[in-house]
Each structure stands twice: as structure tokens, then as C-alpha cells.
Length: 93
Image 1 (tube, rainbow, N blue to C red):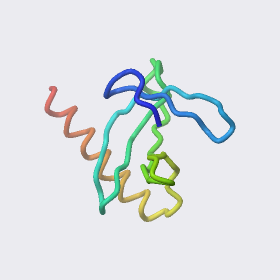
Image 2 (cartoon, rainbow, N blue to C red):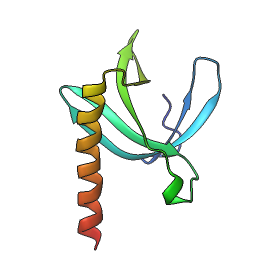
Image 3 (cartoon, one colour):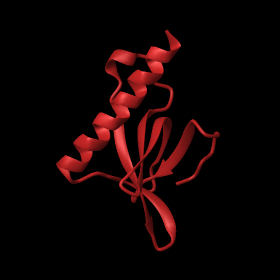
Image 4 (cartoon, rainbow, N blue to C red):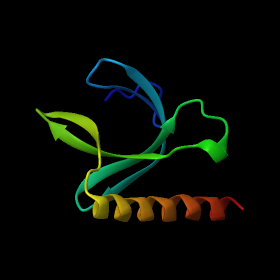
């Protein structure tokens, strides 16, 4: 995981070597793990945004991002992140 553009954007490389630019919407600490809500960088249409939630883990001493495979863990993290994002929207109004 490489933080190329600052705290809101990152470039990741998958196992096939393909690079993806992501915008980080939110970061959450939950049960001792770090989770990130991300969307593809440069996405303009809010209605069609697909938010991905990734878990940061260490493998061989390096931080990597992976999909959450446990449905209960994913739902709990999703709910917390959505609550946080909506709370931020309410503060801006």
C-alpha cells in the first residue's frame, strides 16, 4: 500500500500488478483492526459510487489491504462507517 497523494488518496497494486487509485472516505479502528472506506479516485457521480470497505492487515511486516470475508464483521464495520459519514454530513449542514 503506497500513500501517493496525501491522506485522502492512495494507489494500491493488486497481486497481478494492476494499479488502482482510490479516494479514502473514512478510516475506522474497530476491534484492534483498521478499516478503510474507499471509492475509485476521480469518481464524479455520487449516485453510482460503489464504496468498498477494506481491512488493513500486516503480512510479512508489510501493511496490505484485503476484502472482509466475514459477513458479520463486514456488516458491523459498514454500519459504523456509514454512521460516521452521515454524522459528518450533518455537521456540514
